Image 1 (cartoon, each protein chain N blue to C red):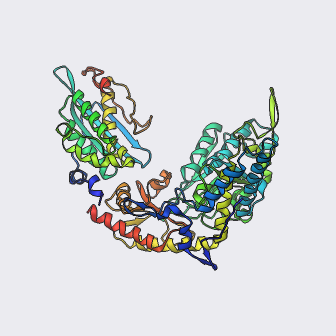
Image 2 (cartoon, rainbow over the protein chains, first blue to last red):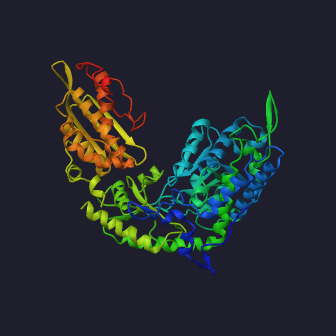
Image 3 (tube, one colour):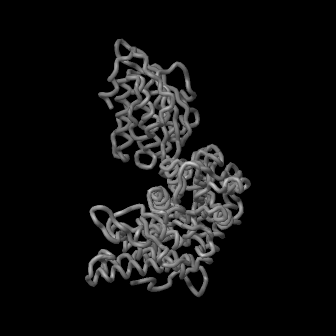
Length: 429
Length: 182
């Protein structure tokens, strides 16, 4: 397997954005006749050649259905798939057996939520996951819909009560009533590890400690954190962590659920079918241990291999360096945008406990229109509520324009964004 | 800049000075439509009257949160359809929909659409077509409700369950005039 043929983007320990950009052919194209300025990595990241090559190598040399058949290609495909699992595990400090491949971070969260309602009719080993009337499911007002709607649905299916942390005016999690919200009725706490709107990084470890003291499970949404800074599940705190490949330079169509070994072992399955069974009789079936129990169907081996190549690429850059680079861009964007009269940045104005998602409103100009002017300049941003409608309501914004940064972005691109916002103001004045 | 092809002056005029904005009485039906991708919303009221045995648009008023394209389109729509028979207004709606789906390749009927041909530039931007159609879809839905007194089907924008205070039609108006056009 090609991991990285050459460690491009890394010249003698410095973070060389020019060299990194050379690995991403799409960044050389134009948009609306202008050089592309891609500031929408929070929605999906671009892919380096190393990832594309790894997938192509799998398909051109090793393609077969993993975990099936005794032929050579089947063995190679299985090795590639399981090798990818080990690589992803290493990326977040986990054991391979704790890595469940899903189709997305969204599916990873749904897996836990559905396992919890399936626990209602499972054996005593699944006691820990059972929820019902009188129990509480705790979320936050800051969540992406992917870490909110599955919990609303779990409550609807089981009769449990949904509760939530609010947010403060500056976009932090309001923990002032944590002692009341996290109580003996709390069965699970679902919290983002980094807001996809405000970039806010809630104190997930502190929340997990409070929750664990009451016997509650903790699920963290790492879709916006794992791609952007070092994450070590051994010290993080939560019991489950969900993230997706496509936001971290990897392919679309594959996501990850990390879970503590003992919990995964006790958890009933969500999606059932081939690959995840132990013995099947007409009267009923028994299931494999994790992670296979949660991976019904032919595995997405090529995508797993692509994700492993993305982990390789990011580790070669060094996640602390990635985080530092993004912090620099974020600080520049916060300064440039908040300095424009009429622009309101949603969320914290400093980079303390804050990642690289910068959402803002422009007085008198709807985000669609801001985004359209930026698009005309070749600048790609996200507009709307970014799948976090309740958070926008809480912050008093109907919707917003969002810029997100990654390894390949430059300070000049941040300046182009601020210039574009000024042009939008001029256009709609 | 290609922007001018989307944001024609007439569109910006309607955006800055929207016509018929603000909800009015009386009305026969009210709907609330949302564009789920961006959260834009419109609440729209329709009052119908009888014009020689045929239903006609007596009044359309609305309140909306949204971008310049959705605001201007709703504003221009009200000017185009108030006073027309429902049949004529549905024809206009169909012509406007065709224009919006043309990807900039259409030949809009200027005699029929008047100022609304200015939206031709918007049709080149697929992400914005729903914005231009938000008001029209709300009007069609409200009119269908007003005609038969039951909630109509959403056509693209909005979602089931988004109806707010759907008012029953008053029975004066012959039903189905709109249906055959939609």
